[in-house]
Length: 397
Image (tube, rainbow, N blue to C red):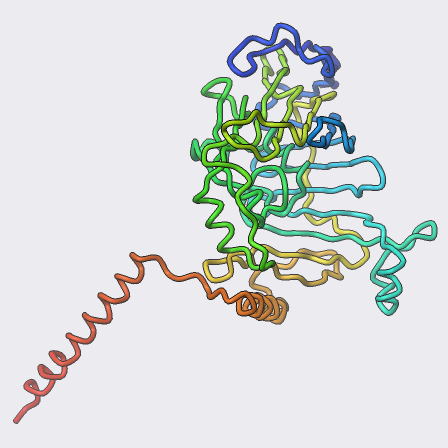
């Protein structure tokens, strides 16, 4: 069957509990879609392309900086891809989920002269184009949430790919789509979700509510600095709100409702007695929708060496451990690969040194685990004399 090109109109839908009769002026009331399907396409697979922007504001409300970008989000079965291309000089990023891990690959990062002078012996590891040296870096994290990705790809993940994760709990404590995911400034918020319907996998509204419990937990695990920051919000304060203004409206038999215009507003820290001020405003607009997703390849690594920052080795003892190593053969390395043993040991030693310098010991086991250990010790201590006594009396005379 030949691809069919049609134009579909996006109708305003409810926003914050009210019908959006007049969509925001910045966002058009309709978008163009190229719908490709063979027979009846699965609503679970899709590919969207569009434009996004991030506006940073000062306390006086003036715009400090605006970064515009283009994106493509592709979902096929249990895998997905986010291709994010910001305006220059920011580098492009590919964020890929293969069903087990998330791989975040940042390509063509320009190297400054100071760096090159310090590492002249390693220039062969970098790409040289038009008189400029470039490098690439990658981060790997386990699970479907993109811990390894930058802020804007995480914003797009919440819009298009978060449904299967957010349906697990109404108050998740996964990192917010701002700041580094290892910092308390990102890990201290519970996510509240509103859905447009029981069957829709795209959230209509997300609220990121500050939790002092999560802040304290994240602060205990952070070992990078002796300067302990103070909480930016009071308990229960809403630090940011994501909402969908316009949805797609593709008719049957291939009907699917996907966010077409969506926005995230993040606030400066505030107390309950004051009105919050907007610190950041992100928006996204879909310009093209395909109901048949293309292939997703996870092994498209650059030819030059890639510096990898691997988050897959984190555990209770090393909750924020990052293992760094180079990849030179364009192939991702599995966690059980013996070549990583040296890098894991180096990372753990560095982690322990940082903890010791801050006077912070490794995390203690939970009270329940400590009780179980004590019980087992007492049981063994009482059982040994009995066992030896029985053995003595069981010997033939």
